Image (cartoon, helix red, strand yellow):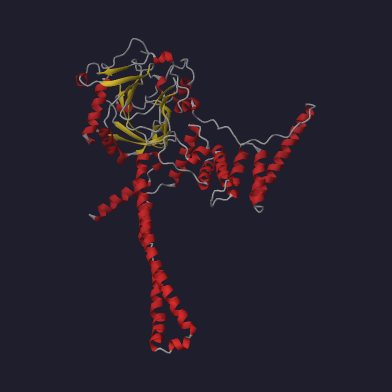
Length: 559
């Protein structure tokens, strides 16, 4: 029996050791309790050390009184045979016992507990992921480092701030990733807090070393030299800084000579020396064509909800086309968008059902994956930061109950739908713009604009991701919000400028395909980074097969 238990425990350790804590706030809560246990263990160690020191202190005070008396008249003191005996005994026995007391190791319990707990600690990858998450929040919600460092975030219950060491760590993470934009921002913040007199073990020399080189990478020679000179004024023996300064001076001299030649050719004179930049550098472009639109929507900006469109949106009671189960207790339905039609349903899941599903999902959470558009292979990606698990109806009656409810509301069958997916978003958790349906090759003569053109270029060679299921494409998405989110975490549609905010117990529903079976490329959507809060969702993807008569074809390709 013991070997089996050891094997289970070993597997348990491996699972937790390899866990990416930063990708799930739900699983990160376990770390809170682990840290609390370590604090209790540390307190026990301190109490043991204090008890030991108390004994040593008592012995020292007693010996101090005794030696003061004995040294005042050594012969007179030793004239008493008992004193002579006790002196011999103390030096032979009592001081040895004191030595053993001093050498007594009270750290065993604490160190043993720390060693066990360390197997469940976050890794270097977690720390890097957490730092990048803060930078992602910084970019998406246009937060300056000062705001993040001081912890001035909306909806926060427990405020916290970053130290010089924390800011320096953020900058180093960016630097090691070749991200000089964030290196500059966070090293500047570290330097600012250092200049303000914050107590820290990080030196200004270390900060300036990283900052000057990152600034140089932006081609800002004047500022790089200014920072390097400041570094050298603090540490004149810094070899790399001295070498860099000489290199920068040569580059600057070369730059001046080139400008001088240009001015001579143009018969003009250089008027002023180039102005030192302020350090406000532009964020580099990346792989996502609709980055600006996506992030603006996440901030609640650029939502194209016009008064005219608003007039076309209504609230109603929904009975699932007179579904017998919903005639007496219909659901409240609210239009979120007119075209494509997106609706929100209220009171879809009770608090008890939500907690039960979270309880079932939490032990199974694993890093959410995406399907590579070229190979069709599932893999993790930086643009999807969350953990997910899949629940079957056999897991608990509540799963079947929720599945049936979604079937009744949508009028679509769950027999060919995918399992209920439950997702929990971690630090800055997000899923950048993507489609829920599999992209099929389209007509190369198709006229398209903006995001759709980018989509065609990226996905024209993608294989049919759901072919092996034999159930056709994902015809519709039913997304349950299982938590409120204090800030961020919206579901946005960059193509037509919609933003839908999480509300616990509600669900949103939309069709991914037209009635013809062609994909509706307007439904490219994203889960915005969670700024403050813990976001839980669950979703059901309905497929084409089994729904041919429940949602029959239209008369045109885009019905």
